[in-house]
Length: 142
Image 1 (tube, rainbow, N blue to C red):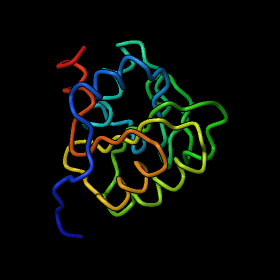
Image 2 (image 1 turned 90 degrees about the vertical axis):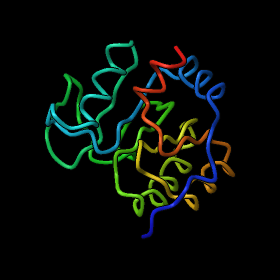
Image 3 (image 1 turned 45 degrees about the horizontal axis):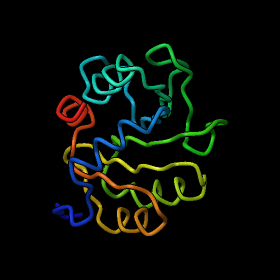
């Protein structure tokens, strides 16, 4: 897939509203490796008081939280998904988020853009952020 420029995105005021309203964040692709961006961002968000839900293909626990293998497996409400996956995985992730019915925010981390998936999520009523770091944005607006 070629690199895309995000054509579907929230502005900073909407980002501030997101952080004020969400409580539970599923981090898709949350690595147990402390040197990875996904780990650092999730740890920061956890330290800010958000409930972090790791979604990763292995491990039992990351950052002291039970690891789930997929978004579908999480048995409780998820307000936001923070995605650390390749852009071509985002359409499947958007479908899973929409199917759950409780996800309010579809966030693709810095360097991750898939406008088709983002538009699908937006059309389903989710707020969408692409190509932005949740940690950087949180520090800026909160």
